[in-house]
Length: 408
Image (cartoon, rainbow, N blue to C red; front, top):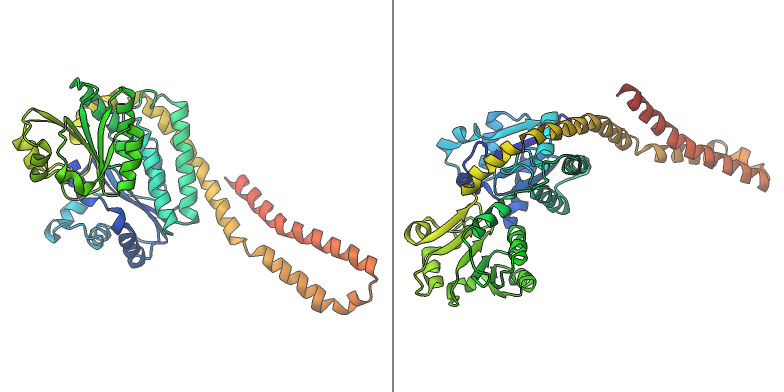
């Protein structure tokens, strides 16, 4: 397990507004991962980016020194000024070997989340892994890691009370919105049709909100969400020309630049002067600072939910102990599984080697002797050889597994 590494930028050490600078968009993810994979001789890698963490999980025989972290960040071209790079790298968390596995298990069980107990992180982790797996960045080793990660998370969510009353960032944001007593026919603009906005839309539907306009770069995705909400779908570029007014904007996109600029906001207002609501769940924010500063707005953002999240953390503290016990047991169980898999991989060539020996014996060494056998005798001999071939293939594997179990 010594080759498992994690480089993590999280809300614990980096301000959420700063953290947004390190989110990688899907369009450039493949290129960036391929670059670091080749440069550092990384075997497998996947990237996780959420509203409160950016993490790189990879395998490779590299030493994760402070200098390596600096060069890793520099290679990914996040735009950190060279004179600030050393100081910034010191805020990055690094995990290796068993500590890296423990960290991944804690993430999947939401023990490291902004809000402990939110199951959303497991779905995000699985999606991030699947994306990199599909694009060929992961292999057998990280497949085993992820299988253990998912197993552990399911046990924690099933056998503890840590998520009995789940409070995700989305649900916290929706509670804040509900506190404003918006009427059910409030005009709601939804910008972005990703997982976060799909999730908050479920709350809106549940409480009978009915007046929606959905904007997204890929209009087909906006149309899918609009169909669910019985709303209207638009291309994101149409935002500047939208003149039907609004009461609430809910936005969450992967853009690294503000979507709601002052120019676009003025256009959306279309002369209205009453106080509006913006729920901005993007990191970095989709709303430019000038809009927040210069207009009457109820502004709900990820950063403002931190205080509530801390309160929830305290309430669920007792359950952390139970979750950590499950994590510890799963780490203990994983060692023999990993060793067993290594033996399986090492012994993949055994069947072919045995077949080569059999063919050599039949076609060369004992070929003349076999010619003297009658049909029935040859048939019996073939059955015996085939039977022994199967046993010779299985016996070493069984013995190796027994040695693993006895030495565990």
